[in-house]
Length: 397
Image (cartoon, rainbow, N blue to C red; front, side, top):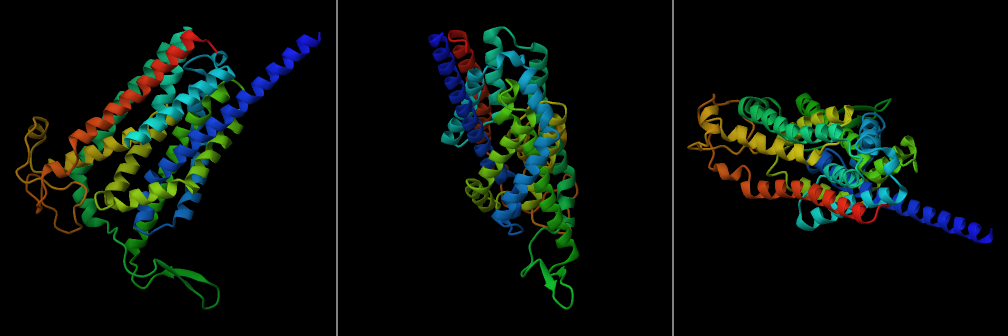
């Protein structure tokens, strides 16, 4: 009897240790997600001086929680019990899956490539399912199909915007900041906010648009990424879905208030290559795609969609001087335009005419860099799936 009690106590102690480790790994994953996602969402607003880093972190935390609490539930359900049954998510297996996600973040940071935590997490779960023979192939096929279709949709939407709409938006929207404060308080009587002395109504409206889209991006990031941190723990019952959402969103918020300061600096300093208008188009399209996929329970990569938006926008702008057929055939414009640094002007050349620029098509985006990024996007979930399969085949836990 004493031996049995001793064994039971040791087993309970191991479970407690595993749970603590699982919670710490989940918090680590969410922490890193918050650090990277905040820069992507609020970099344009902070870099242009519209928001402080503290306010950006506050908005990121609030809207990431909102996204996780609403659309994010469906993604957690998919990753926590539909790819493989919930019964396969033992506490040890959940910790192993989260470890692979953290490892992917480490690899991507080492090589300077933003890995998709969603794809990596799904890869680890799929490896578990194949090893145990419990993978739902129908669900997995649906997820992978959207992984292929979503970037293509992102590319073509932004390509069409860049080719047909971007110059007119650039001529219509004035997103430059005027000198002086954007808003002042009129202290005569009851304090009332008024536009700054150099602020035009159009600039004020554009500022509201920039901040609103940044918040939308944060919402989308929370909806898609909170599941990456907590879905395995929710799947095995160690956490309820509400507690899991709060843990994931809290960890994202912690990352937003700490390490995101560096990513905000990086994105803000790089805005000479990606001005606010282009960033807003990229954010709006990519966030909308990810929000839609989250609502239908598909874990997808915000980074992949955003990068394909950038490539599509550049390709569309570069091919304004040729027909679509010529562009698809690989014809290079005689004088290309810089897709992402067109200056605001009222005169927009019609399709087929060249815009004044001294930049070549190679200035739009580097095909070699794009290929390296795509390679790592394919590599990290593949390695995650193979490592997970090998672990769970050799040592079922």
